[in-house]
Length: 291
Image (cartoon, rainbow, N blue to C red; front, side):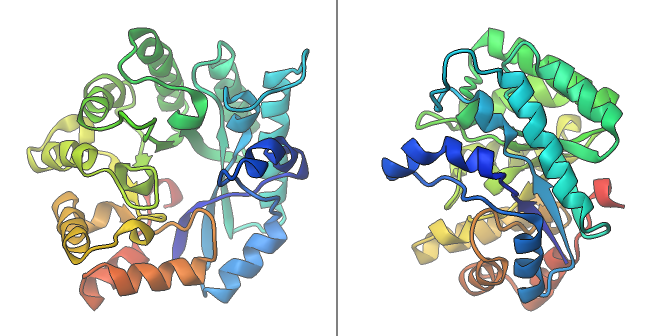
């Protein structure tokens, strides 16, 4: 079994979050590869995809000191994450990250592609200030997607971008960004939501595209990280199970994000009304970028 949504966080990155943490925001704690491996072992999970949180160093949510070199700090966090993952070869696969709106974003994609240790790119639209309805943002995002496609780097994207996120943003992603990356896997985190739970109006766009055979969605995958924790009613659980079947079980990847992998998997099993066979299928799925 693979956990497709995990994070390592350096002490330097964790210090960035002190103010946000004091304000009551949910932000990552420092986490080493050794600690992650212990959590995976406790859950009997063999492998994990580690998504760098380097984009935080260029997030508009973080106040940086004057003169801070965002690109250098992002690069350092990406390299730290790769170095940590290298301590456990065969178990941890690492993705780098950027704020895709920065002018140096494509340069960081090129640097990490040449590095050779990274399988893909993590993007977090909310924490990067992305507005999917802003043409200038779309233009810059396309450059990043095209660069990732050129280097055959998979993309994991936290698509949820704020309270107004929904059908319009999902449609813009489907029609304007996915065509820029036709040859790589694009994995949408939290089943097209922000977690806990997911965003039904956005997911409907992707489910319909898959049902109709839209070529832009041919390499689209979804991870279920933290979704089950936000499904409070029987009807929301039934709807989510139906959506899983609509997009296709083979496109569904297990993920933890924060918290205990064992507890998250147990919650997913107990909350979502799928059959034992369907859970076994999801547990056994292997994304193309790991084959």
